[in-house]
Image (tube, rainbow, N blue to C red; front, side, top):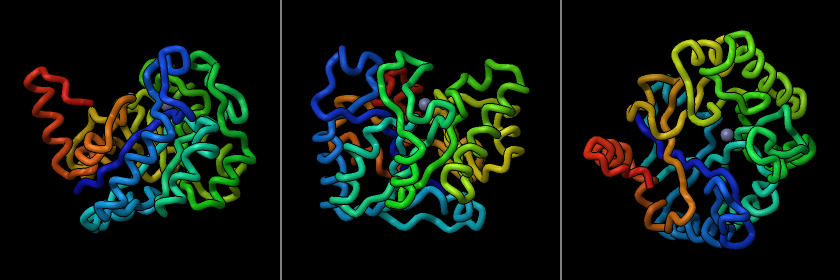
Amino acid sequence: MYLPILTYHRLLAADPDHAADPKRIAVSQAQFRSHLGWLARLGYHSVSLADYPQQIRTRQRPAPKTFALTFDDGYEEVLTLALPVLKEFGYTATVFAVPGQMGGSNAWDDAKARLLSADQYRRLDKAGVTIGGHTSSHVHLPQVEASTARREIADSKKRLEEVLGHPVSIFAYPYGESTPDVEALVREAGFEAAFATDRAPRDHSENLFRIRRAVVFPGNTAWNILWKAQGWYPAYQDFKRRRGEGGTR
Ligand SMILES: [Zn+2]
């Protein structure tokens, strides 16, 4: 069981340079439009991740040419730059939010990027975007005390549910980092499933609390994205990795 899930972080209005994107996690809005435009032209459909845990549990295979889009951290650009493009192509997405910093900035990093406010999250929610948890302050979950990890996970769910007025059922690990103990805490908090990055099982039914995603990098072309939207991509990526060729781009 595998659904290609693309992981974006930041979008920028212009092509990212080092000053605007020192951590190399951004793509331009034009690149994003090109990625989605090609997927749309080739007949790909996006699905909401809110329904995916149940589909995995009941072994309903994703339809051919379906994929999901995710944005980690909840940068303001999801609303200002991504949503208009999603609407152009009739696509939906999921945002993994850091609610302890809502309306603030990415304090865990350089604090220079603005994050979505509570009101902006409500607008995205109304526009059909799924919102998930990503801890309340973007901590390295395997490195903090268990009590801190428990609070960071549970608070992200509670705060988002207060803002949105409905249950929040999915979670993504900051930095893609989890351990079996961390995964147990996410389950205990009441989340149905949790998403990692590309170091996770290729079969999504193997561990609902460590679901693999394909990370999008700056400079990824529509061709790269098309590869990442294929069911064989994780096997290819692991093969390249075993040969020491990276293969994560
Ligand atoms: Zn993150």
